[in-house]
Length: 120
Image (cartoon, rainbow, N blue to C red):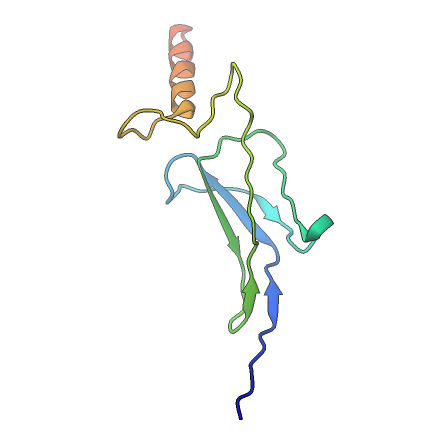
């Protein structure tokens, strides 16, 4: 006689959000704790940054219990600022074999401006 096993799925709780502007291996800067237990309409949970933040890589970390089965989000969405005169999308061609994109372009302009104005 075969008996089917039913798993009890646990929703991931608090999730630490960290960002990096350099590499997928860090260095990491902590952005905050996302309380995923507070779900809204359609069982969704949202984390909103306090201010616009440069991000190239995101890392999500949750504590889990041994021998537990967890449900992961079906969909995870991250929204970037809309392109404008002062911002260009990271999603684009920024040069073959180059890590540099709009962030580095903007930082280089700021660095040149500070040097030409005598500030460091």
